[in-house]
Image (cartoon, rainbow, N blue to C red; front, side, top):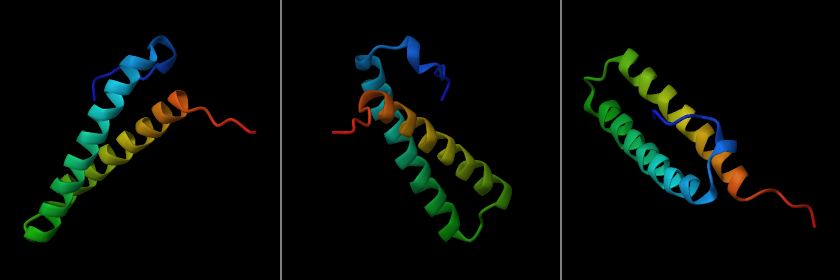
Length: 74
């Protein structure tokens, strides 16, 4: 997640590609968290860090989606 967070400087094609990458990374983090949680050997600090990263990705995904699909009141 080294991408700049200034979405205004990026065109829609770049944002769509980044959106797919971030969604994939979000799913991977979800799988990793689930695997660590069920293994019973999970370090709580590591789990917290992964969950925070997942939440940051979720927020970034939402911002990109809002930029690509503006909420238009009909």
